[in-house]
Length: 67
Image 1 (cartoon, rainbow, N blue to C red):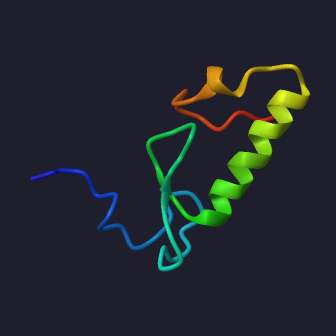
Image 2 (image 1 turned 90 degrees about the horizontal axis):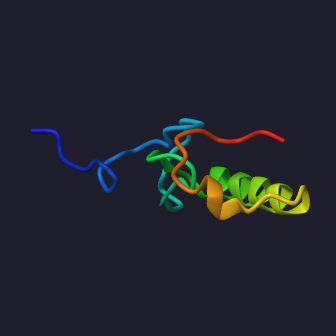
């Protein structure tokens, strides 16, 4: 029985830190990530915008784009 493990994961799928302080689904992937990793994704989205790219184009793209 697979199912969605968003609420039952104990650790961030990206940095592996504990998810006690909160969790969110990644903007770019289907990973469950911590709030620190989410803040890093926000920074990447700002960088994409600064580079003249539309961050919405990358939503759910399956990878974390680097600049």
